Length: 300
Length: 258
Image (tube, rainbow over all chains, first blue to last red; front, side, top):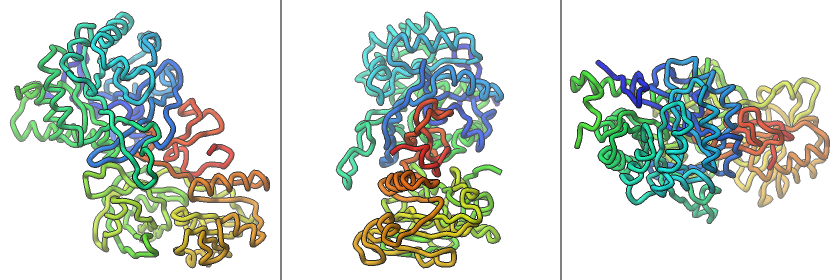
């Protein structure tokens, strides 16, 4: 039985990775799960300098989901390179670094700095809804998506994943723009912009007023968008959005995803990502699937 | 040993006050590791409520592997827990965070153990383990709970907002009214109370340890939801943020800013 998948020349032991921002750089979860069992760890967004993030409260639970507005708090690339990359190198898993920035120059500074580091892939976050500059500002206009992809590709030594926002009118247009800019892989979806009001305190539930909605509540939207993107471009796709178990993960793969990311589920169940790896193997056994690649985009 | 998530069995549940419940759960490994001031995450059975509820550890019975959780019903999740009966199961992750530094309350010292509202429960486990002389100051809105259980460990003083018991006002009003003095403060409660205690400790030049609360998701330090402002640049975050679930929930008062 083969569970290996290939993303732009990078071979993953299995298609399961962690969604950026939900898993730090893996250190905290490594106390509870074996990172060797994951296809890849996708780190929390890393910027050129430390970012303090947003005021608290930063999260709120909603029905079947949660809203977050962390604001890309991160320690900056130098500490990340010194501390987090050596930690992840101890494991037999691929390292995908999520890169965030306020300006094109910020993104490029991080991409250039990571060029000679033992990092397998870069995921460019042009879809964070919780920061005033950068993030989603790059991800809602196809011309901007194409331009930043092209700039990043000039400097990147590793394959580039463009992480797309669902807060757009046509995901296919955005996927094509990233492809035109030279992206190697697409990942989607980031969170949907949402809002929750605390009726007892009569205020916004998160200090940022709006935040990114994630969790099983958004899964049908995510599956639909992965399907549309997969039909719009030839690039491999990392699918995510509300994956709670192996059945959810397989839905994304059948819709056209080559790999999947587990995010909010980690909060509900710290063992989720590892259990999903085993669950996919169970599904393959049950239906006599010899090679996981038979499942990718099998529903058309 | 490390933090684990497991399915615990409810040993008993009683109602202490209007909306305050006391639940003993059997979870041997978590109980064995738990120290005063730590917390656990409880998960609802209702899958639409995704996030765990962080609940402080009120007491442990290490021989029997039992953990006591005293919590207030504040929403649908805690409401679900309040219906659990003996024999029901509950998913629990723990022990989480760092406890109170017991060495700060060594023999010969006189400590204040101060709890406000649903910040009172963790002070009970602390009272059982602190070697020094203890004076317990408990603040309530109106209905009392757990106060009688502190009496074996030290003199207990009460403050209520409506004046129905003890001093009318807050915990600091009770301390002033009774003319209490101490060498070190251990406290858990609402942010305004912690802020006032930090100022009081600074004014009287005494050590002070505060247990903070913030909205949490992962509970183990990965998601960065539950940060508090720190005085110095934190070496993990490289900014003025510390994680309540990981570096806390107990902080030295001068480390944190409100």
